Length: 446
RNA sequence: GUGGCUGUAGCUCAGUCGGUUAGAGCACCAGGUUGUGGUCCUGGGGGUCGCGGGUUCGAAUCCCGUCAGCCACCCCA
Image (cartoon, rainbow, N blue to C red; front, side, top):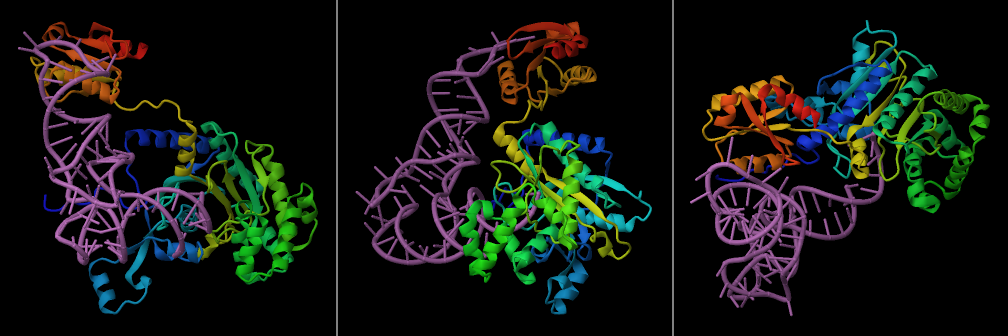
């Protein structure tokens, strides 16, 4: 060894050992089953997309976080020799940042998809963000989207799908916070805040429950929003929280009225489905991605700083690919966020991983006989590991303990002559000599 | 991007008012004799004390820089 190489995965990325994989598969399995029960069909898209597909969809923040893939060989040489100045000269592909934009590309590309395309997609995405608790550079999203309709049924169905997933996983206390882009914009304008300060105001506003009223006032004042305006905005939002507020907003003309009416429809429609007790109107909810146009959603759960998922309506995104404007709405669950909370709360059932039987081979038994016996056991449906080396039986049983294998099948000359193994239950210590053919039933019975 | 904390064995950490060959627990390996584990006992391997520089007779320990990790904020899933 001349020099040691770091054995850690890159920052913000992780290895998953057997127990991790089992937990991830458990959750993904529930997600997949539930999404399919709602009639969604699967989609998988490439890890890499063209930068033209990705850029300009997420807002400037998002563009900054894209992983870009350097040109190779001649193209790179040419770019470097040509005095390449911009990122675009050096790369024209990048890792996907979410699953929504690839979906939009697919819908724009395949014109023969069903009019209502309901797809789910469970794949990793990459963001060159700074890692933190529950935030990674490589993480999995579990998306459901419906394209081709503006009807509130679609909005309610995606909310219902994620609500069902969370309930089946054992969550009871989550909230699906909903708001509306157009309504929010109108309320900000009502407060007399200039359009160019709108984004800023929304970001600070999002912190209301953390920093409090005075904190928001202070922070906005520092950024050039008059305190009177902030107070006015807070008052407007405070009024919007009241139960009857949405109804009176819905009577207004213009975008605010439209937004409020859409939210009322969503609340009413959602009330008939699994999201019923979870959907809550939150006038301060503002989401970062720039492609949202109508209702926006976010999953809130106690004890988690960020959200477990989010989504919304994006009626203009597919049209950005220049073929046809198709409305769409979707919801995305963050797999790692779900896992994090489940781990903290001890919500996982016992998940069987690894072999059920360790085949222990005594010194006088040929390798070929061990393989032959293991093959018979596997044919009966058991997960069987053969102890590879020759070792004292004590060592082999010790190894079985460290693996957590519940049974050892001991194969020696005596057993070989009988076509049997000595099956030892490692929890009770009991052991019996059994014909190979009966081992499967015996193990399953315990 | 901002602020704070921490870098000593595979893991969790002790050791630091500067002083002989740097420690523990867990893990790993080997023994406590022949085909019976979990407990126990004994022994063993494994560290250029994150990296670079400085102060000093002498640095894991003090100073500067740097990198990495963690936490909070920001943002997000």
